[in-house]
Length: 230
Length: 85
Image 1: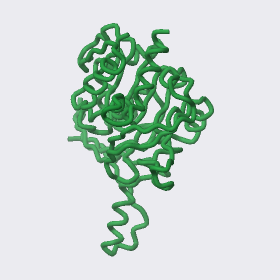
Image 2: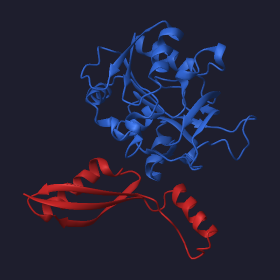
Image 3: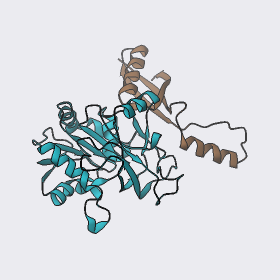
Image 4: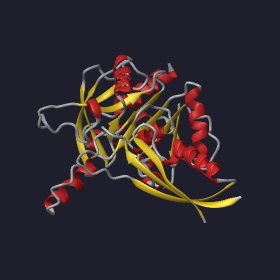
């Protein structure tokens, strides 16, 4: 199967996202330039991490207007899988692919650290190789990761099983500081109602090789592979 | 067509945690301005736009705010002034 990784001006996670499916899964990946109009028949679109357009105005606000995004939104509307990591999550929210918004970390500090997460829903296209309730470790690196939405939206996300990853306290984190950015209800990653768009602040694409630390991001890519080729 | 200078204020929605505003309020308290009850930090944008009249300029600006300049999920906006230039 073929992954397509969008490169925006200011993306810096595009190489990690490009490399993960190739080296960890042995699958194909291509770069999709932000000015292109062609998704090159990819099966899955990855919106990578970084600081597209310098985070001007708001993180992800300008990237949403890149020519390629019209095709990405059309792909999502056809039911095609779209994954946004970090800045990609911010872009997906700004583009209306996911509800809510990512605001400045409550600490006002950029946080670059491994965090503990609980897999809340392992019955999605993106998480079927995890177990529900499983605790995993993934890196984060962001200054604007505080997930926010109104109560009605949050209640709907919870009721529909759309909260996929939550920051979780483990022996590694002090009970009061496990949520690294002040996200409402400890939300780290969500899917849309249809279940084909995932956005998350942590970086699974940076955790696919056991040589470099926990490879807890690998099952996410395996899940996509199993479900999309099934 | 007439050219207008339009000033827009975009502020975090009331009730949402505004850590930047709180940090500024804390700093003002440290400086001795104990009377500061709250601070909200937003954006001030100044546009120069050509429009048929002031109402059209306001209409265009409102649409720009709704589509790009403010995030409808987390921010409120207000057109602070429209001046013919």
